[in-house]
Length: 317
Image (cartoon, rainbow, N blue to C red; front, top):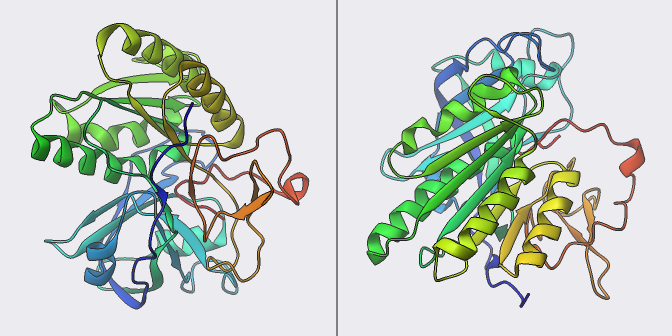
């Protein structure tokens, strides 16, 4: 497969300030999932500077306010940009409530202020719009795909190209279906299929990469032009996506999930193995989106054994 175009771009303006909380919503009862009942939250913030500059795949770094737990989270939390509306001057963040920091964020209410930095990340999803697009998200990796899907639909309409959009979602079970419901706004604009490990009602039992393998096989028969694949999810999922797209010979971009501390490349704690002489690049600065051909999944990232996965994409640390 030839090198994919897109990925790293000229740095966008980064803003630091207080964003006003407009709404804070619980995304339904999630039963006994990993985060417990009501463990997913969506914040709508007024942040005109971020909304104007936001590109699909970027994130913001938020300072967790004092919350219900003793003390205060020391490190900022990197949260994917779920949606951005320049006209309304708003951005949306979706996260899983997993600890003191995100519990503090979940306690925010309309009228509160949230200190944030963003948009961050120089590796973004390229909005091609001239070919079919397949988006694949696993768990919290679904979160950044809505902004991408909306931008792709808009670009396809602008070009008047009948290029279909397919969204493939992978969840562990019914507890994560609230994340799938976020994409109901695309009804009539995208085809959608959902896989779940436990075979939840309305889903296909299996993995999102099973759906992707089928979609790529059908694409070779249905479409004259090769599709572009965009994916976000845990490392094993992305490694499987890389194998599938290289076999199919289609361009792809992958958004990695890594714990981050500084979010701006100073601490170098989010190094990602890449192919070639460079060996490592930084998820926060060079990513979080990379061309599929760039990443080296055969090598373990530094400190990976000590990391505890959180299913980021929504909360990257």
